[in-house]
Picture 1 (tube, helix red, strand yellow):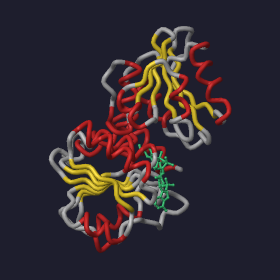
Picture 2: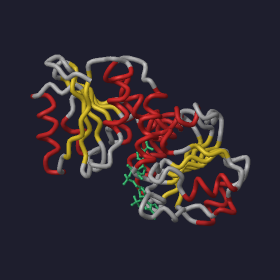
Picture 3: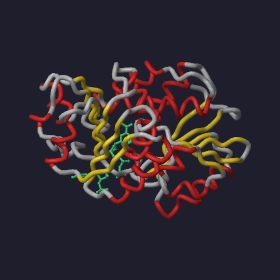
Picture 4: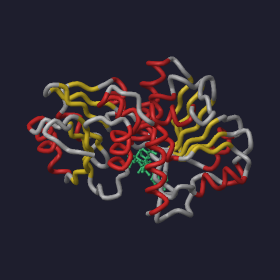
Length: 285
Ligand SMILES: NC(=O)c1ccc[n+]([C@@H]2O[C@H](COP(=O)([O-])OP(=O)(O)OC[C@H]3O[C@@H](n4cnc5c(N)ncnc54)[C@H](OP(=O)(O)O)[C@@H]3O)[C@@H](O)[C@H]2O)c1
């Protein structure tokens, strides 16, 4: 990669940021397509989000990913927000078009593409989604347009009830927010087609944790755990043992990154290149 005065600069802001896979995936994709872009990681403290976004305009940075904990805070400094990001109050991608900053959320489409490209079609299905954070809400927004029924399970139902009501009205589907309890999990899993863990449970260093009792998993269920560190979570291992179809969190990571890449470059993302770069890196850390 040769950096010149014409190179378009993209990056990711977050804190901590050292663990991010975005520079690895995005630079591999830029190189594969031989386009003049470069991607860096910027550690930005919560108190500096406004300055960082002002700096994006001032330095003519072309695009940004926004990660934890700034996905919500960044919104108020942008000029236009896409409908998904607006509904879930969370942006993970910014495009700078002639000084005007556009905000997007690619987590939902990343999850949908990860499922579909791994043989799981959410259309017309019953989906159980665990979590109430930024990623869970974005996934809920996108999948509620596909699924027949969406049940969001979380330990705090006030944000999810509000979202479920909004989605019900907007998409006219069967959408509910219920408490994350063993009883309701069992009840809803009995006739569910797809289960998604969108909480941080199972993430290193707590890789032996799961919110789903292994005996509830079954062969006619597809399971996606969006946690990608470790590469195979306890939930994914249990699901595999139960004979369920398993989609890894790395797949969502790749497809949400691919969607950001396409927003910045207007080129089709080289998904295979991004997958190889992410997996190569993950097996070495
Ligand atoms: N694969 C990908 O592309 C991708 C993309 C984004 C995020 N992720 C991963 O997804 C996970 C969530 O990310 P996020 O951005 O949504 O984070 P977040 O906004 O902090 O949300 C985390 C969610 O997990 C819930 N949670 C944590 N511990 C729990 C427990 N013991 N029992 C029940 N719920 C629990 C939280 O519940 P409370 O609200 O009650 O605290 C919250 O709803 C992280 O591990 C992140 O790395 C993966």
